[in-house]
Structures are given as structure tokens and as C-alpha cells.
Image (cartoon, rainbow, N blue to C red; front, side):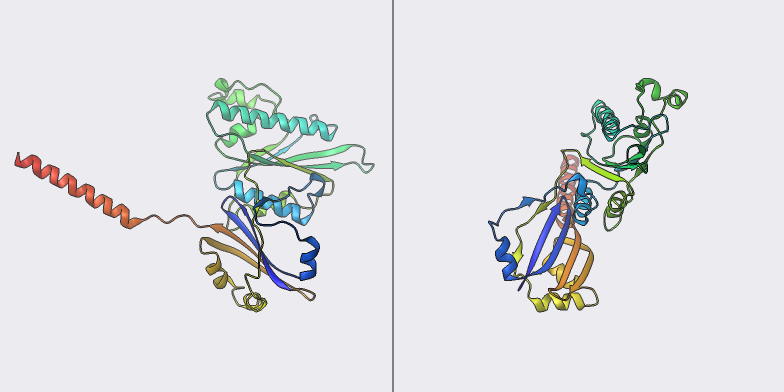
Length: 303
């Protein structure tokens, strides 16, 4: 048995698993290794699976943060879609309107994660409710994002200054755009909330321009069994030890689990550190500039 380190990166966000592996288990799945590879994207039907939710956390943390939005869209009784396909068409049209508006304003292209939840009648033959959760990049005002949850054509010249005109735009249903609330775990709380086990059914999708989670080749036997055990049993769960292993990252969360058959498992979440400003060089260049100005000024007075 040996210890395996698995690193998964998405943007500045990294997750690390340190898990024990047996030689027999490794032989059974042994294949070519040595290159980074994209993490397999979960299927829509498996959204309630633990690994699928973990993938969405990685995707969310790697692409969204401060200044971005969480939009919740519902339907009024008169606008309620009759099928999943109709609901998908309506929300896709909404996203297209937002994408087009961003282009017109010179903003970067729309990036999003979309999660849709459906509720059904007891007979399972009729949709009784639908709502969408959309995580998207910021740039547009929250009022404008909410206003576009409509099938009406919007005259943006009027919408810019005429509040009465805005009030007359008929909404498909209730809509709310909030700024993302970010903490040490990024937007993990939101990602877990929108993917929680539903009473009905959930589907998810995302824009193609998102940065995808990438898994590094596993590092085997980097740690001894004793090192992992000592880290897991320590008061800080090995944080001081692992900070030396990942000096370019801030470790924000460590979880340990023990299994009778295999031993200790360690899971970590961390963020890449921002590069430090080189004060010495900046101060030095400023001093040189001041010195040059002084000499020039002095030279001018001598003339």
C-alpha cells in the first residue's frame, strides 16, 4: 500500500486528495499517465451524485467570484412551461438576450452555469413548477439582468431613463439577481445549495468558454503512511506540514476521514496566492526618478 496525491486545478482554485492505494488496485487500473487531463464532466442525470456536485464547485470557484451574479428565475402561472424542452428554450432565449446586450455594451462574453429544477404532479405527467439558478459573470447592472427575464422586446433608449417604461415590461415570472457572496471556500456554499437533492428533477449546463477543472498526474509515495497519519492526528490537521508542500497556495480547508480497511484520507481546498509586489524595486525606481528630476532642475537653475 502507498499514499497517492491527486491535485485538481480550476483557475486559481485547487483541491488535493491524499488517499491510500493498494498495489492490487493500482494494477487493475494501470494505464498511461504523465499528462494533465480535463476532469470528466458529469452527466446531467447524475447531478445529485457527490462527484458531480464536487465538479460544479470546482467549476464555480475556478470561474466566478467577487462582482459576479447569482440569478434566480421562476415562472408565473400564466407563463409556466408545459415541458422541459419548452423551459430550456425560454431560459436559453434569456441567456441569448443577456449575451447580446453584453456585446452591445462592449463587455466580455457571457459566462454562466445553469441549473434547472423541475417539479411534477403526482402522476409525473405534468410540470407543476420550474425554476432556474444561473451563476454568471458581472458587468451588467442587476436591474438590467432582471429586466430581461421577459418575452417583450426592450427599447434600451427608453429603458435607460424611463422608469415607467421599465415598469411596463411584462416579466415571465419572479426574478432576482444578487451579487455572489464569497468566503474562504469561494462560492462552494452556493454551488452546493443549487445542486441539493431535489424532490423533482435537475438538469445543468454551462457556457463553453469556462475554464475546466484539470487533474494533474497522480504523485505516488510522495508521503509516507506515517506522515499522513501524523498530519491527520495533529491539532491543525497537518496544515503547517502541507503549507510547506504547497508554498504558492493558501490552504483554506482540510478534512480528514479514517476507514478501517484503508486508513487515513485527507482532502484539502486551497487558493493560489497573489504575487507579492516588489517594494524594493518600486522604491528604487522612484528614487532614481526623483534624483533625475532634481539634477534636471538644478541644471536648469545653473543655466
